Image (cartoon, rainbow, N blue to C red; front, side, top):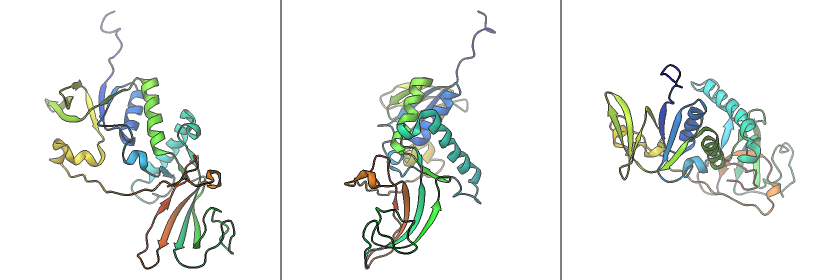
Length: 264
């Protein structure tokens, strides 16, 4: 077989970072035919990508610079769910999203009873609530379990498209004649590449090469996962709350149910 008959060699891409952005990048590049190696420092979806709300909205960015991107993302999630059996694999489902004001003090309504005008509030929400508004329907809002989604996508990329996963800490990018030629991991391992994608999240600022060009910092947030006595009672409603604690400043917690019956 002469050179003209030989298949074109695959482009070698190293993706650094095993969060949702890195995994999605690896998945779609490999699906398009690239030879992809994913480098992750500790474990896949171990930080924000595994603990986020997994909330998807079709039109919440309308009128802004990312309107078309947000809509494309929402529709892509729908098609990925069909491709990867999302409802069973990673908890993909459309749901209703409500905005509710809650006060800590005041008369409580027994669970399941509704005052006039409060019929939109799910039965598992009680207490002094007011002003419920539907801000997302099953046509415009949905969710995934973020950790399961990330891992499902990567498992498919490995099994179906040949992505290699390497657990190791990125130490250096070797640049030759203005182009990246390889990455060097802690311990000295060198991975040759034609292109490198850096998706390091809040750790980007700790990578010297990037820190010299721009600043990236992380924002710490907290989540609490609750497991109710009756998981089946938790209906598919996401809640965006304005909470007025007794004697304190108003807060804006968000509540996301899981198909497993838990919520956070």
